[in-house]
Length: 66
Image (cartoon, rainbow, N blue to C red; front, side, top):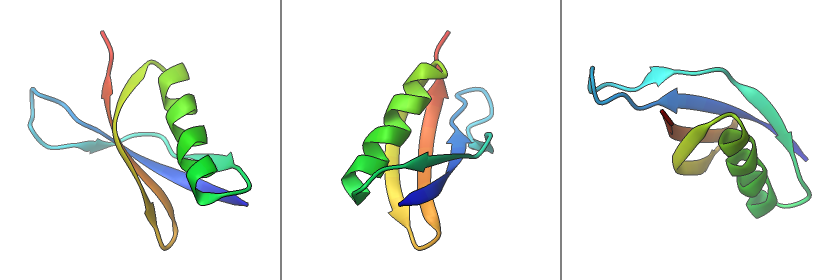
């Protein structure tokens, strides 16, 4: 199965998360989708705070690493 990950970046400066780039992930299970999203976000240099399932895909909250 494939799902789209919607990303929101947490920023300590503004306090409010702002949208980041969306991307697709694929896996055979829902847990696998979460792991694939975490792996991709880490490869992009982001610290994952949370990944959750939504009816339309996955939602991720991240912080950019310095």
